[in-house]
Length: 149
Image 1 (cartoon, rainbow, N blue to C red):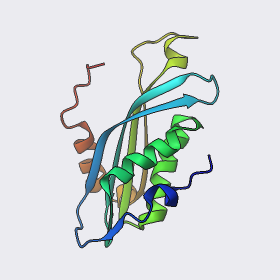
Image 2 (spheres, rainbow, N blue to C red):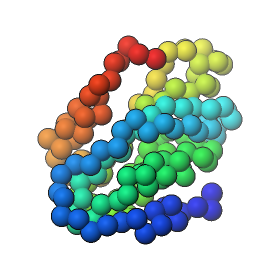
Image 3 (tube, rainbow, N blue to C red):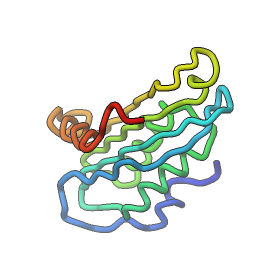
């Protein structure tokens, strides 16, 4: 809980003129539901459009890990990742999508083993520009089989 996004990035922001979308997708994520103390797990897709700075690719996954290793709810986790990149990089836009399975839904209560929860957080051009948002969501789904487990 003491770790901050700046600690994880550790100076790995680089000046760069690239102005198109950068997407790191299918980042494995494991976290613990703060309500039921049961795991939830899935994959995270993180994209941004640089505004003069890019981030080391592995640092994106490190940010996901930093926030996921706390007691969490998926909604907050999604928002924390987006907000951290937005604040650190000051990009044109940020988009985060998390698709996860929650053991609290799979093994207790309704016992829905195949259910998935999808959350998104958008900032800047990902929120304001439908074409940017559509491109991001299309790239997130590229190569994804919706029937796969």
